[in-house]
View 1: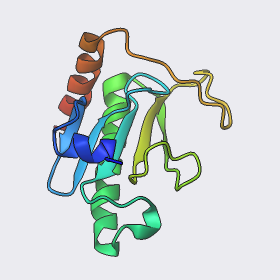
View 2 (view 1 turned 180 degrees about the horizontal axis):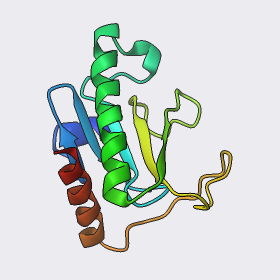
View 3 (view 1 turned 90 degrees about the horizontal axis):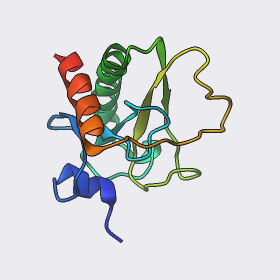
View 4 (view 1 turned 180 degrees about the vertical axis):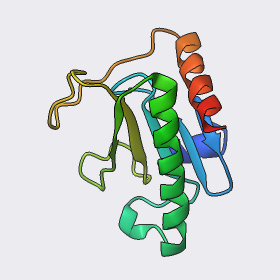
Length: 136
């Protein structure tokens, strides 16, 4: 079975890309917890954190740190939620880190994570553009 994230990395599967470099690609989650929810993935196909080669760790988490700041700034959030599943609850078997904008009283409690959708392709593109701009 083809990996949807590898398709995004290779630009054969459409996605709202917010960052791309030699090691990492970041894009908006298609089913976000909150608008501006970003997934950060290594270009190399590995399924879990344990499989990621040690030299790739600083590159992945430096990107996660940059994107966390950008998501908070671009979305006007008070903070963020950064998370990763390994195997259990991992909907796509390609390592990915969730960076989710948070505000006090946003309704996210424990591990009940209601998903939302962008109202339109234009709204999704606007969020991607704001997050990309905040990286600069």
